[in-house]
Length: 163
Image (cartoon, rainbow, N blue to C red; front, side, top):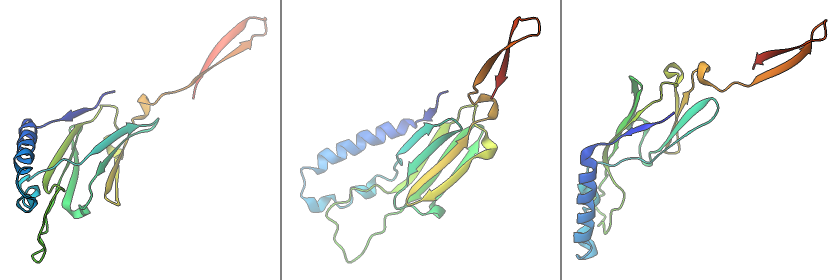
């Protein structure tokens, strides 16, 4: 079973632009870098995906994001996480460095066909979104026990039982 992460072509260009910006800004005094984080305009939350016997689990780090600030949807076996984190400028503070990224984000994942879409559950706690994607019953591994019995005539008969 494989997961396919959809990437957006402009994100590579944006990354190159950010690296060039960091190089350019590294030669200026600290005070001129205050707007660096504001110029980015988008960010991608980090995500872990793992599976166990019954489920696939997706965990996304969304620090500083409130539940009302993002949406989660599934359509045609594509899970989309979309939202944003706003920069809140405090007027009486002079920023010397902004490293946290603000703006909008969209992450899209193609789900395996073995996911039971109707049973998906999501929980958001302490800045971490945890999405549990149950596997369909017919694709879960099953143990087959083989029993050997002796017939009345003394011949051995094998029978199989699926658990």
